[in-house]
Amino acid sequence: MANTKEIQTRMHSIQDTMKITNAMYMISSSKLKRAKRALEESSDHFYAIQSSIARILRHVPDIENIYFGTDTPVENKRVGYIVVTADKGLAGAYNLNVMKLVEKELEANPKGELFVVGQIGRSYFEKKGYNIHRHFQYTAQNPSIHRARVISEEVLVRYNNKELDEVYIVYTKSTNGVDSEAEMFKLLPLSKADFSTNTGFEMMVSDTTRYVPSPSAVMNAIVPNYVTGYIYGALVESYACEQNDRMMAMDAATGNATDMLKQLSIEYNRVRQAAITQEITEVIAGAKAQKRKKKSNE
Image (tube, rainbow, N blue to C red):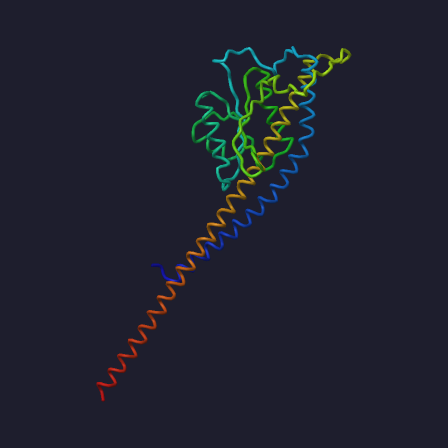
């Protein structure tokens, strides 16, 4: 059994750790609020772009455009994955869920190219020996429309040059405000069905609608903004989920530390009580010995 000094040292260590976990909880809480606010502010702009694409497709349903698919055979298709992870750990299964989902996809597409956000993902896939086409530094902790545009330009250039036939983004999505899960979304090529609207009645198509210089050219100008908007939304939502998962992890760590302190406090009291009992026993034994010695001298 440990002595009182060892137990006290361990209790002080746990208390210091609790201060850190509490501080990390408060920091993540503040960051989560900012991330949710940023996501709400960007949603209207993104939905407006979606509506514009849907409007063009309603007027020109048979439009031919590279963003709606290439003619590459299925067996020869080259796939790119934008992987959104964090720069730091201590966030539960936040990073692991995304990396495992991507790894499963790479088993089916071993030549898939990775565009990685976050140091955790970069380190993981480098150790596994996967092909990382580009790593976007400082993006996970500071998602912005500029950083999203840098990512979208990278994949769009490769897609337009037919170096990629499909582009997916793998990120963490909030399911009910508390829980989150890894999500994989197909960015390119677009699916016309995803932009169809079900309003319950046939929308009138105006014969006077014109797209200058052409519907395809207008689509070419809108789609990059759509891709950028979706990537930005995924970055911000992933960042919010990261902070939420870290809050839960730190809360659980603080709770475990509290339980450990209770157990150590009980153990400390038992050891202290045993030491006091031992001292009392020794004093009594000494007193009895002195008493016997005094009687023998008489």
